[in-house]
Image (cartoon, rainbow, N blue to C red; front, top):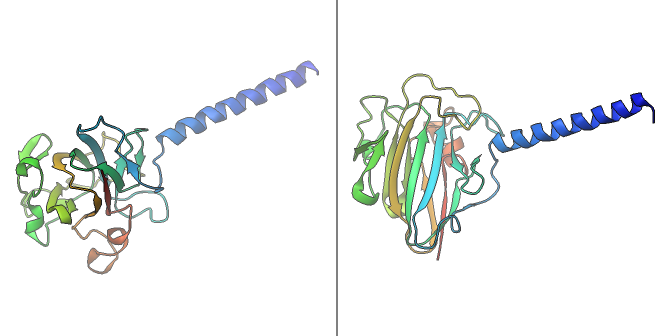
Amino acid sequence: MSKGGRLATVLGLFLVAVGLVVWAVSSYLAPGVPGGTVDYTNTQPAGQPVNLTLETVGSIGYGAHPSWVSYLTKDPHTGKWVQETSWKLPANTVVHMTIYQYDSGSPLRNQEFGQVLGTIGGSATLNGKSFTAYNSNTGTGVGHTFAIPKLNLIVPLVGVGGANICGSAPCLKTFPHNTETFSFKTPGPGAYSWQCFVPCALGYLFGNGGAMSTQNYMGGILEVVQ
């Protein structure tokens, strides 16, 4: 092989290697798409609390419905944000929730949804400060709620003031957001639905269609196992 041919081969292999590195990095940073249940049964020692982290975004920015609001879950195994709202959790176990709320808010149609109910201690924290209820007619309103009806659990997620467009999810912590934390205990084995009770599906009758009624957007399932 001529010197020019060898140089071309080396250059070609170098470009392939660079391409593989770029692909690997982008694959890691890019959010995952719905594909199953996020398993928390083997992330913590038996009997120890589970840490579950979510974020809410005003628009997912990709997929079949890029303009829809959505929840995302931080995968405990990979650290990636995934658009998956079904979780496998151990029974009778404390779950510590952290939710980064990036969406704007508005007054609630039913102020009952502004109360914190069913959490351990009957409270949650908003940016480090404990609260038991939020008056959505003041401040920045409520963007979403996290609620598990069968457990009588509901936590209002306070909205972010002003325009908050972070582009495609997941949103970075450099964008305006609220951080809320709370804890609850899983019951015995079974399937428990969770959902948002704030009608936030723009363009749908009463705001209850679209993302509000579609799995992996504004609701999901707790698969509790022994």
